[in-house]
Amino acid sequence: MLGLPLSSYLLIVFSVPATHVDSMLDAIVQAGGGKFGNYTHAASLIKVTGCFMPQNGSQPFIGIHYELEHVEEVEIKTVCTAETLEAVVEEIKRVHPYEETLIEIHPVYALGLKLKKEVA
Image (cartoon, rainbow, N blue to C red; front, side, top):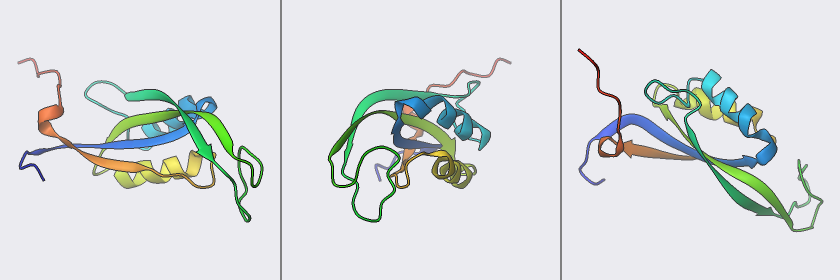
């Protein structure tokens, strides 16, 4: 897109109820994600307010049909590699408490990385 080299990392972004952040991060690491350099559980956690109205046929984890709901959520931004992407996304879907959720996947340009240099 920009003519810049891509890194081996992909950025994954999604929201989850604040009560489920740690269990989601653990699941992501178990699936091979959330690892950056010599760190695991690598993520940015941003408090957000989710808004939705459950409709007929839904089985909401939180909320009541046809009532507008505002929920304290946390947006999780974490990483994985192309090799672990499918496993990580499937694990997020499996563990996420909501029956429907959106998972964003973005490339990470090599220019945007700062990793510890190998010591010779």
